[in-house]
Length: 125
Image 1: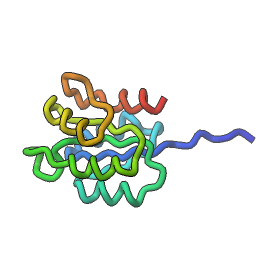
Image 2: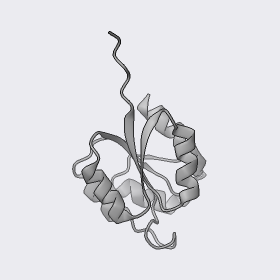
Image 3: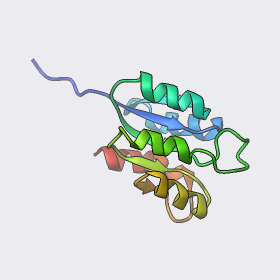
Image 4: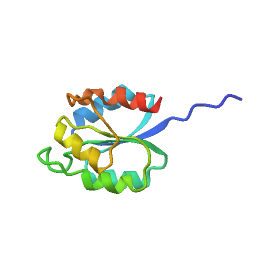
C-alpha cells in the first residue's frame, strides 16, 4: 500500500481578496488554503484549524489597508507556532515591523506580493 502524501495546511491573513484568490489559484492542489480576511477571523482559524504548517501575514488587515495592525496577532501566534511565517506587505517598513513581531520570512525586497506562492512552495519543499 502506497502512502498518500498529506496536503499541508497554510493560513493566509489578508484582507485583499484579489491577492488571496490569486494565491489560492496558484497554490491549488498543492496546499490546503485557509483564508482569513480579518484579524479576528485569523486568530479564530489559527486556534480551530489543526495542522497549520505555514502562515502568511499582511500588515494592514482590519483598517482598509491604511495602518499596520496585525503585529499583535503575529506576536500571539508566534507564542505557540514554530513554523514559517511570511511577512507579505508591499511596504518595506511594514515588513520590518512584521519580522520584528515574529515573522521569519518576507516577500522580495520590492514587496511583490505575487512572490507569495513561490516562497510558500520553497519553504514547504
